[in-house]
Amino acid sequence: MNIIECRGLTRQYKTYRRREGGWNAIKGFFNRQTELKTAVKPTNLTIQDGQVVGLVGANGAGKTTLLKMFSGLIHPSGGEISVLGFKPFERKTDFLRQISILLGQKAQLWWDLPAADSFNLLTRIYDLDPVQAKNHWLDLAERLDCRDQLYVQLRRLSLGERMKMEIIGSLLHRPRVLFLDEPTIGLDVLAQTTIRHFLTEYVQEHRPTIILTSHYMDDISQLADRLLLISRGEIVYDGDVGHFLSYAEKTLKLDIKSEETDFEQVIHKFFEKESGRGQIGHPHTT
Amino acid sequence: MAILTQLEYRLNFTIDAVIQPILTATVETALWLGIFSALGAGELGGFGRESYLAYALWANFVSRVTTNWMYEYNMLDEIDSGRVNAILMRPISFYEFYLSQFMGYKFLVAVISFVIPLTFCFVFGFPVQVERFPVMLLFVMYYLIFVHTLSFCVACLAFYLNRAHSFTGVKNLAIWVMAGEMIPLDLYPEPLKSLLLHSPFASGVYVPVGFMTGRVGFDYLGQSVISVTVGILVIGLIGRFLWKRGLRVYSGTGA
Image (cartoon, rainbow over all chains, first blue to last red; front, side, top):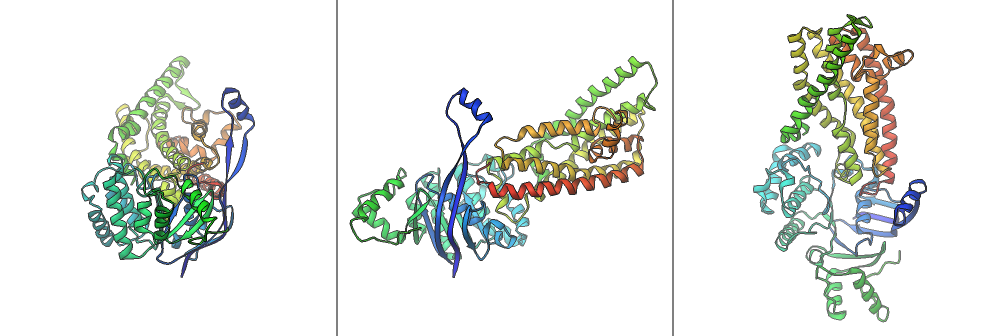
């Protein structure tokens, strides 16, 4: 069963440009120069129920924009999209109850409250049974090893502790589709490992459909069973994660598990090599 | 949630609910004392010195409650910074989410801070109709829906503009003038006086304060409920339009 389907999905942003300096600032005050930037080029994609899809690309490649369109945070500029049978941007209540998005670089719980209060508030927002919900968040906190921090104001927690709380908040209503945008970004190795282990267990137990973006190939290799490479707003590779990893490491001699991996370079080398051989995976012609 | 959040910041709450209105009320009562002393008259516009002192005292406390600075800034910031994503992704409306917080917080501020003008009126013998207090409180809470709806419209501007905070200052200052925060509306010249008395803005200060101090009666309060209701509907429609259109241009990272 297809959970996500899109055809010709595209997104453009209007941006304001001005040259440096005081005079240009004055000119810009009266006459704004704007331009349209294409973040996602027309994209066709289907994702099936229970699949864990890793979305990988360089900064500005269009990963987060794609995720935001799938989750309904932003309107597409063109094309068609269906997630769980809904048009995400309409943000119907039945749709929102079945999905969750975790943006690694943005706090989604309430900054001034202890996480436990935020979870109680989310319990009411999602209309969950209070006892079951509390047992659920206590269990998740136990597994993420952060029970002691549940009653501390969110703003006083470390980045790793905050991220664990964000994960609990995003799983509280047991979503069918989970969008994870760089869930381990900026975390130390120990916190990254804890979160990866936790997510692996969670996926095995609950079988949600997940779209995961990350700069860390370890996240993708451990969790995803399908890989999408995105470059300059276009999906350029759609295939098996293990296959791509071994090909990149053994044939192309690239260390793509390094934190400094330049995915634009990886993709470039990959296709440079591929142009002279039969392709692996299923490159998209969108 | 608003009450829980505010109780985390005790000093900020005390300043907002008690200290600020005491300071501004002191300035305005001194001003009215000076005016009456300079005039040498016992009455102005049909009301005596005590009536104006009572008005100045109540007006500052009521206007603190009926003005939205903090939550409007928060709403603007949420859209401007993209933190609104946390609400957009949940089955709750942004308008209702902030309305419940705003009302919860303002109810707490009103109940605590209105004790001060009540006490002063008793101590100094200023005119006050104590039995009207519950009705006045209910009326103020109803007016807050209008205030929040206006703030919602201002917050929606953050979808289109990167820095829309200046609108809050301009709007609140204009409302203070239109609500009779410093000078009772019955002292304004015609036709401005009639226009403002029939607008929902009068319900921000003049109507509840006049009702408590005996300047206006129940008939006037009823008329104000109608004008506030019309205001909520009209501004609500504008807000709905700005919100829907704003979401279409929203980039998920702010304006």
